[in-house]
Image 1: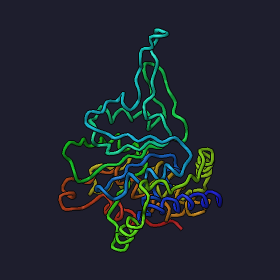
Image 2: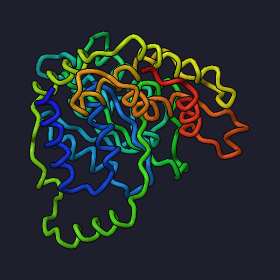
Image 3: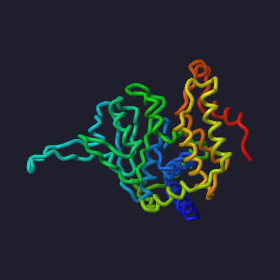
Image 4: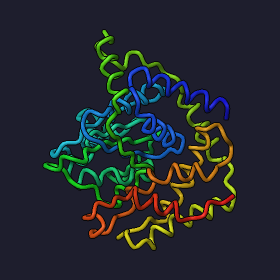
Length: 314
């Protein structure tokens, strides 16, 4: 566990060479990495969503693909397609950019439902089926997708089933004044064209797999499992929510809590780990009732109320 924490601290240091602030986004990305879960990052343009994901990918010695979603993007542009080989008179499957270990999907809500649906099987089962043949993805396999919450022209809302495939939804805000000043200073002093050049590889694919296995073995007491169940059940019974969280959310919260414990250098989960993971795990899995949404009530606010209303196990 000491080696795991040391390696991840090095990853943070490498990313911090370029990114100022956004510690919460980096922490959640690392937790998702340890959990072997996918991430949806939402924020306005220019808050370092894409560059942070690219930097994280560079610190890990695995394959990286970036896919820009556009309205004319087809499923075959992502998954691949069968091409006729004249030499042997047979069709050969040419793999698409999804066949990598770290996939960055920029503006996932820019493509229509047909293209978004192409990700269902690969995100859930780490495999795709084409022309009756099954192709398994190499581990580790992580999808990080970004979307802009403000601009809705030419976008397609992600269906609930698609959102449920993401372990986390991370909301990224603006930096504060001190961070903004530091960003400007760093840009002024930086003389290199490519910012990612200063970031070094820290973790190998084998190390990451070992870390993911370590996270699975982290201890969770029975009263904490009950605490997780109470949180999830409360979302289903909450009068302010139109839709509560599914059992998949319970499992996601359990896995994410273990990852946060590992990030803190512990081999056991605490209630604080569960609370910290709850917002990113639940905010995209619950739907605020229309009346409350019109009043300005957010999913995060309701989750906070739920957490405050449940007795913390000791």
